[in-house]
Amino acid sequence: MKNITFYGRFENDILAGRKTITLREASDANVSAGDKVRVSRYEDDVFFCNIEVIAVTPVMFDNLNETHAAQENMTLEQLKDVISEIYPGLRELFMIEFRLI
Ligand SMILES: CC(=O)Nc1ccn([C@@H]2O[C@H](CO)[C@@H](O)[C@H]2O)c(=O)n1
Image (cartoon, rainbow, N blue to C red; front, side, top):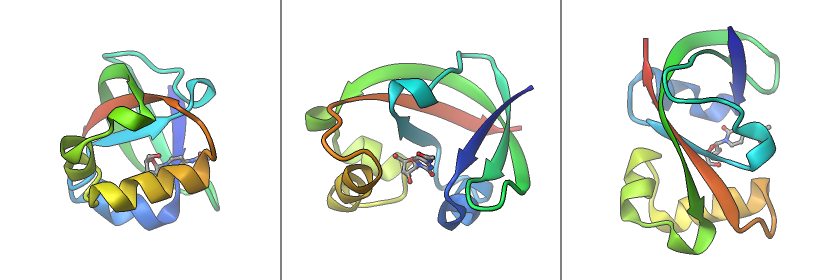
């Protein structure tokens, strides 16, 4: 099974179903619709759930909107700040939509 990591601060939102997408650079988006993926924390590699990928869709940073933010359980401003910290200057992102399994 493939693996993906998330920063530990997002674990609770993912487990509660409040965070249903992640926005990644191309090299971190090597999954496809239907893939079942193990999820662990980036900091300590501790496993915390399995997800199924619903879709992977390219999205430009400048086209991020309130729907993306809601799916991340953030405001749009918070989401843009988070992405700018993780991927400074990156314009082309990939939205991975997922559900808990
Ligand atoms: C190594 C590495 O890049 N790990 C990442 C990258 C991104 N994300 C989250 O995806 C959303 C959009 O980027 C935000 O919620 C981010 O915090 C994450 O949790 N862990």
